Image (cartoon, rainbow, N blue to C red):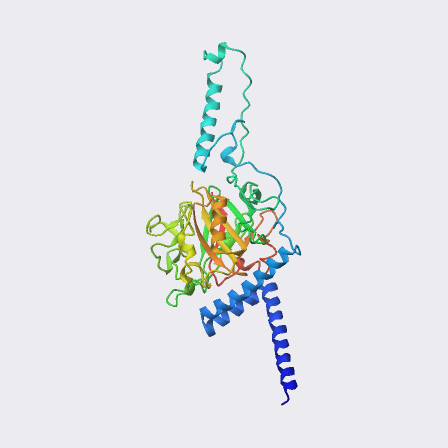
Length: 426
């Protein structure tokens, strides 16, 4: 065969390969389920590590393209939703006009309680022989207007308008706001990494857990339905649902629902524990959380990402059993997480694209997470749905509409993966 013919064949093969790669890249980018299914098939045939390497290459190429487009001004970061209004945090709602310096949420709460008491005391003593009664007429006291629960205000480092502002998001059947949402930009090198945060009032909601009918996998475990109980699948009762953690082969973390232990709990792992009375804890199993016999469910998913208000240094050590099967953690991807505030009053769900573990941890700290774990990662699997109670039926509304685009009603039927859902707490 002539050299020119050989060159033509090689060029043709290269062109066809390039077209196939571009088409595959497009399909994975626009149809998350295609990429998720393809990855599962490949893992079963060639193993976890080769697939992790392929995912790393894909995510790095995608990230490099985005960095180039943003660097050239072709694309600009945009808020994931329109911010409705500015909200003042509850911890500062009765604060006087003077500037107060409080370095922690607990100090702010103590200050707010102090001024509540001092204002009431001033009203009690005026006019009954106190020094103020014989002095000049007192200025009428304006009682602070009670406000409903709000998450603590956060300081942000991004550039988007509306970042860090809490907007009402999820309401119960009585119209009370039980969850607010905001967004942050944790990575200055990736302005397109915009993390959505939902903050739940734990005095108003109950977190529930469902084992998928396939995952977490244990061949010796009894079959389970993967369904939300029918009595909870009604508007005003089912308020939201979101993804669980890794497959059992990628972490081996413990999971239990209604007394069925699919995988045993492991000491040292971050755990969200739900109790029969509706209360909730999030911390490290074996130290902060132990089996008390009155748990309704619990789910582990690797070590705590944030522990006692500080980043766990283990996030810098790439261990597939800790953070998901990635390679050297150089591939920013779509990640999700669950965290709790220091005073145990607020539950946070976080989700955002193009995040490294460090960016996820910084996002947690930025919004006030005291203890937090990572949940599932990668497109399609990271999935949060709200169900507005005033629409007449269960209409799924995704938290991030541009990313959470497929199988929006997955939690309303039997689902193979484990997940959480939210109901009112009465």
